[in-house]
Image (cartoon, rainbow, N blue to C red; front, side):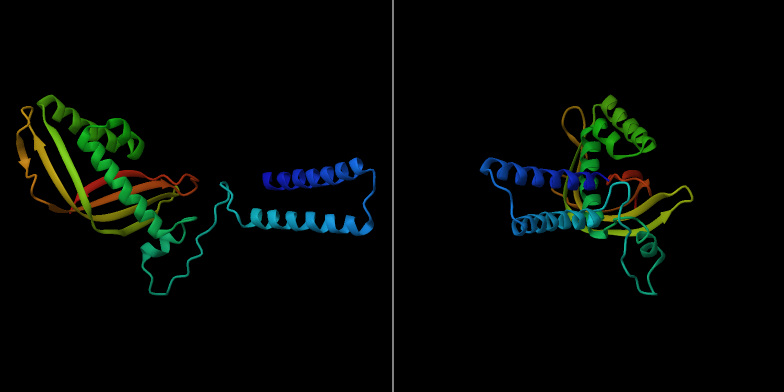
Length: 219
């Protein structure tokens, strides 16, 4: 509705300027000039209306119109039911979330974790962090890169909650140090190839692009 209000305001501005110009000049527009002005206004309105009609509204997101072959997996079929879903963009965001969460967990940054993961998972992470702090143990994680990031499962529950499971294969350097700064686990020179299975979740009706991490496991 707001886009049509903008159209009306724009039209009024055009008419006002048109009227003001000829008031200053002390003349009246000819029929030809009126027609030209009306045509220009009509073109501007047409552009705005078309833009409004093709721009997704936050409360009415675009449906996913991807056409799948008959042999498509159940996971792919579920993904097409998610409004505005783009596989590549989701995986890019998932990799960024992976790096932020792993880094925040390593650094003991519980505030950041609480914004990115579910309450239950944040509680588990916090327990591990507090235990390390009590023992004077610090963690260091360096993510070198990703060998793979793949959606392995997707489902929509009866309460319209979407869950998407992603398999990450990444190269990492992980070490633990004691309070004296000595390495007690891991090797600074050794790059590990690690497979993680993470599950992200959000409501189907949510207009937010943000997904929460709800579970993690090693594979």
